[in-house]
Image (cartoon, rainbow, N blue to C red; front, side, top):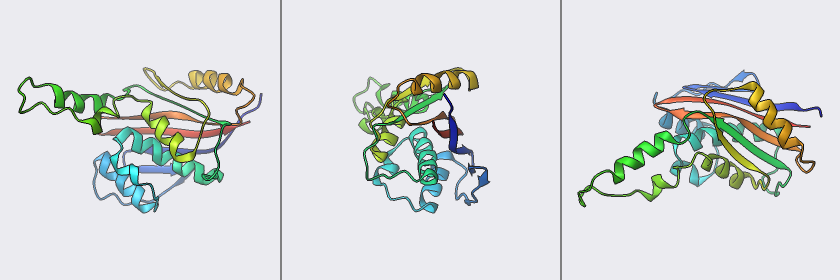
Length: 190
């Protein structure tokens, strides 16, 4: 099988590169969540759920938006032939830690489980957010790995495209933890 990367996005703390071109977005804040909000606004994306997302989902969502805009994905159609596979090393630890703080106290005055945090205590929520936004009905998976591995990614790409109904794959590394954002996402097709 022959695969080709049709588009990619590299997003790190205050740096955004799409298909080899750096996008100049002046950050208002150096904190990831605020900077990602700045990127969202600069790109003039209209998706109200964005501001409710956790940092991990925002980063993956923005990378996918830029990639799908680059390849011309029609968001009005359902896509049964596209899969989404992401990796990271911290899972949803940033949100897990924040959620733990809402349930840690046995004192009823300080016990306030947060449903808005709880929903993001699974790393695969980012793939779900991307799938919902783009009407993708193919496979979505999220793997936790110690580090980025090209060979692991190649194995997964080969496995995904072994299914003849798959024509496109959005995949890559999406990690946000302790104010460090590290995203390398790409769209691969055969």
